[in-house]
Image 1 (cartoon, rainbow, N blue to C red):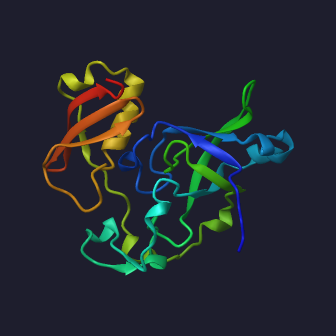
Image 2: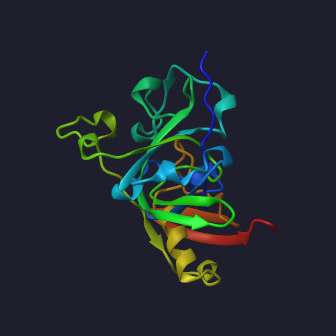
Length: 224
């Protein structure tokens, strides 16, 4: 029996797992990686800014108690076909480990948390524990690699910016929310036109999708 412990925690605006991108690298939303006190040593980050991207190894902490399944239904296949869990990136795995590549924006020195990492493109929920960080190398992108059933590139929805729901958001908030909506935050196997909701940052967001376009119905402060 092996035991591993988190070295860091990630912080961002993905407060609901349904708002998280399907894959890493598809959005430019900023996340901050804060190291736990035991690993808060600047020497461990020496030369890290020489790399443009990083690998994060992390824990599906929100669902690990739900157990695992030998077969899963990937959203890429419409939820109608089962594949082996080891032929998928499903979170319902024996060890509930996630692997993501992110763009390194830089290292920031803070008074409270020491040196932290600013990264873009993460698909991790806010407060997700991180077990390890490794540099992304050019050799990691294998030429001619086969993508199986997931070979198709991400297809994004159109976001309709009309309506009162957008008016109380700043331009930056509009951009961040639109980057989530265009990836279709509905549960993986539901694709109808009913009204859906999810939490993002400090908001509860209500939306509908019709004919490939996302319409923002309502946005409320989650604390209300």
